Length: 63
Image (tube, rainbow, N blue to C red):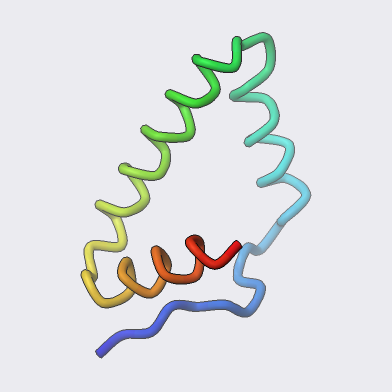
C-alpha cells in the first residue's frame, strides 16, 4: 500500500506558490473555485493510487 507524502516535496515552493496565485489572478470566486476543482481532479488522476487518495481525503477532512 502506498502512503501519502507529508514531508515538503516541492523543489521550488515559492515558484509553485507564485504560479498558483498567477492562475487565479483576475478571476472571480466562482472561476477560482472551478480552477481549484479542475486542478484537484487533474492531480488526483496523476496520483491514481486509491489508497493515497483516500489518505488525502481523510487528512483534508480533518482541517
